[in-house]
Image (cartoon, rainbow, N blue to C red):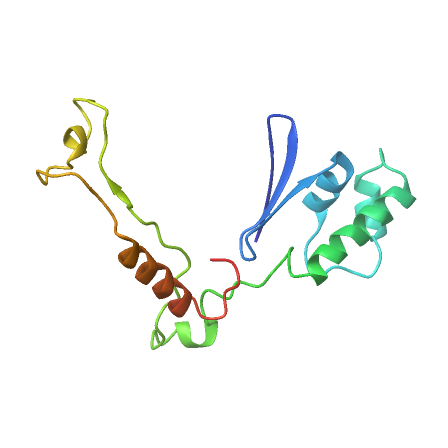
Length: 151
């Protein structure tokens, strides 16, 4: 799944399944909005017709750059999070895709509305996560992430 968007004048594409983030020029951004995998060897005429502001040579160059990203596994990656054949029976253990660690149980702000209760989170004491717990959490994610490359 690829999301394209513009933020602060920058053209961005995010391949959700690979975790890759790309900054694109205008031509490649507009071209990518038209692409549906699998990509043909050369830029199709129907896509070139939708982008008349760019020359055929420039579109072909952009097309080949997108194909190279796809070949490197950085664009149009398959979703390996769920084994679709096993998902129907729900017999598989789900892969861990991400983990958020709460490493600091402390806050020095005094926001009256905040759940942190001025830093102790209602526990009565402040603390930070010890190294061994953090290491075990990271090892857990690596072990449970299966074939995922970008965690």
